[in-house]
Image 1: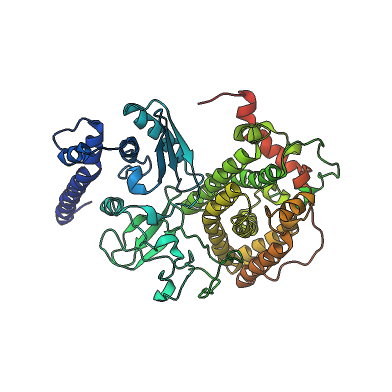
Image 2: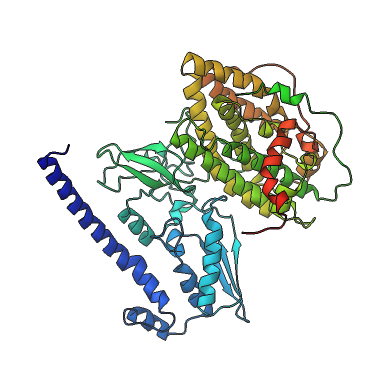
Length: 262
Length: 270
């Protein structure tokens, strides 16, 4: 039995949720959909792509056109993001005879979305007039969430995803911030001491891992310790895994110890 | 419903695998790594609908998926000069043609067995891939560097569970102790030296297994001690044969299931 007061409360929550969802839709509308519409209208500039048209007024190379076509393809697992947002696109070459070769860095080797992404890229290139297109996979340098663009980060946050703070180039460069904020030279960051991941709902800094494995290989499940809300998060990926000594050619002046992981 | 693991070893004979292989040494090496990953992946997927909690079901499935991704990439390399696709290698070979270590093919046993095997295997993969990420072959190095970021999570999962179960209830401790004792002898094969490894090591294409084995022993022992399970058993029995195609009967049953669709409909596609 639900009391009247509870029903009223539930209704209010529904209204708030609907409003929130509407705002999010509008955000996404401004981002992804506008982008998709711009692309869907092809090379002819539609009314809302004046800026693009202006940019295209200059000489645009075939490679740039191809990059736009491929970059606007939507990720099948995170449909709020384009491949450009996700940061999985490598080089795009267009040969003199119009053959397009695209390099993609999969987020994880076994990610089932990879095959769909390859297919969607070829389809997008066909739709934009390139009949001869192929997609190659590259594994170096490995993909990390650092490669998600700022726009991609904003879209994910709007969808309620946690995103690990950027660790800097390769997380190994001089000045990279390590556990405890130490900045003494190259600092390996272990998966046991993840970068800060604030709550996408209430913004609190303190969130905990519920499971390192989530709905897709690139995701984990976390919970906010302040508002209690569970949320999906992009999993931090570091070049130096916990407790695995790197090959002798690499230096670890500030290696952290500690065996038990939280 | 766990079968005593040692019983499966009795079927391993001393006959050698078919001679006359024309595969390049680096491809034979990729075949070993790929088969390790493929068989591990298949065993882990057997936990689907049987894991103790939904989170663990998701975790084991994700680990299996990572292993499958690594297997596909490695088998693609392995089949290059013999012109065999990843599918042909995975589904078209007989048990004698598989090169995975025996540890990976043993039946899952209970959750303790599965966790202990994953701890041993993922620690091996972490160390091995870290070395290979620096090897002289750019393609294999890139693959290993990528896989390394994935297997670190597998190891962390296995380590967390090892400590929780070893340092848990009387029953979980007992089951983990049994798992260590049953599985420990099989880990030796992962670091076995042979002609192929020697040849590749001389060319900077594979690590020298002895020092890596030393680090593995250190790391796994540390986890076992933290889990109140250590030190590891001291026996000298080291079953081997997987790298030359002499497997336990457990692999034959696994393959008959894994390859059934492909064998019924050769060459079919979705």
